[in-house]
Image (tube, rainbow, N blue to C red; front, side):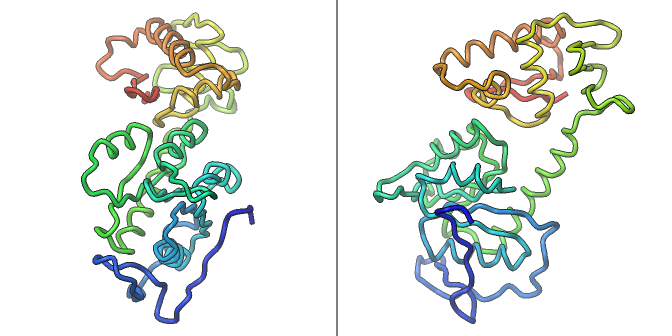
Amino acid sequence: MPAGAAHLAPAHPRGPSGLNRMGRLCHVPFPPHTRPMRRMAHILIIEDEPDLLHTWAYYLEQGGHRVTAVMDGATANNMARDVNPDLIILDLHLVHNQENEPVRGMDILRELRAVSNVPVLIVTGNFTDQLDRVLGFRLGADDYLIKGNFGVQELIARVEYQLAKHSANRHDAEPQAAEHDHSILAAGNLKLDRDRQIVTRGDRQIDLSPQEFKVLLCLMLNRRRNMTFIAIWRHCWGDSSADMASIRNNIRIQVSGIRRKLYDTRAANPLIVSIRGVGYCFRG
């Protein structure tokens, strides 16, 4: 088990301890007829309230899943890389580092989205901060829950939904390949040959620069997923030492060239969609 992580077990025969809607500590009764989820997944919970963390972990494990629990926000992103979870539950405001200083969950999400598209379900105790919710979605959060406004079964239902949705998207996003030739990615009449580095649309060959080819390949491999500027940059060039302004400008130039050459700039349903302030998504 990676350092800083924990697998939790119930501390009370009546069920795990948790907080009720009034914020009081209570024992949560087991849900009747709890059914297993669709498939076993590895779920990472980043939450610094032990009672909530224990409750969520217990019921997710009862549903057949493996849970890794992290209470230290400073190691959250390292843990996400080490355990490679299928889904992350992230406390937005109450994550702390080892010195007990606040760590913004939004910063964890931003760093995570630079390297991963794992589904992230954000949990927050703030009822009113709409700007945080908007920013969270723009940074790539998949869902939001407000503490005190949901029960364990709703949490499980939302986790189930995100796992199923992500699995379906990943299946749909697998590029179509020519028969017996997995080097060719296809979306409609657009085909990209990775081995020969050739792109065609219909019967027309598209003359892309090496940089444009790399960016298009990255977007097609991550079809229907919002890709951040940094994630695209790292996928194509691997070097994250450049400043953010240069990264954004470079990728925007490459995408602009790709769109122009694909005649995708004025299409009613463009292949490449801009995600404002975040990056791009290939929806072909």
